[in-house]
Length: 358
Ligand SMILES: [Zn+2]
Ligand SMILES: [Zn+2]
Ligand SMILES: [Zn+2]
Image (cartoon, helix red, strand yellow):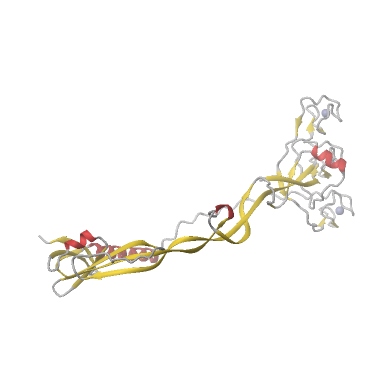
């Protein structure tokens, strides 16, 4: 993130002695003359206007004001002696700076009533235009906290019964699937299917960033897309900034800033390359114990692709048949027609495993 300065605005402070609102740059109260103490913070006005005066901007940038170690009066950054008591400011403490005060208030604020006489005044007014009283609003009293009693999870009898029923159903399902009984089965038939894919070189279209495209590819259409977002500015990158907000500079002015990031664009393109692709397949099948691969007649621009094999064995039991499928040719060779096996059958009548009959 890059923090960018939008500009500077005048803040406010409220005199703790007489309650008057004062412009931030003013170091003593305009009503009672008291100096702003170190613990009285700057606040955002109801509406913030960017300062245009060069001298004011210079003062806003000068750094946080300092408080005199003898009389606590506010003095500008860099001052050597106190404007109020003349004391040496070598050991003066600078005001805190950099605190985020809130979102930049650039919208026009609604008029507010004077807390003394009720007359409507501009939200930014420091004093009532009618009675001259301070427009500082009385601080709202902190509301007593009402803590709600914590509620435990509701666990009524209905939920309990529903939960118990679900558990019972799961237990029943596990029982039906895992509990098996032994059945003697005789191999009735055994069949096999073997398939070889035939591949040929052909054009295939893909998409990628331009710098990722293979050198032998034919590039199609390209569009600019956001490749990534980064914190540092870069040539051609699009700046994306967040909502402006105001930070206390400690000088009575606020710095309006924005956090920005940079979207870097790159070409996203379609491209075509020559790739081996499945164009055909040859299948051979049989019902004998000797599975074979189909013979291939390949032309010069073709090659052999993936090999697939599937075997199916049908067991006959007393009155039932069970079909078993595998892709393992060694296992298939064991199931000679007429051989006897112990079939494990679960309560859902599914064949789960096969063992040799003893
Ligand atoms: Zn005052
Ligand atoms: Zn002083
Ligand atoms: Zn008033």
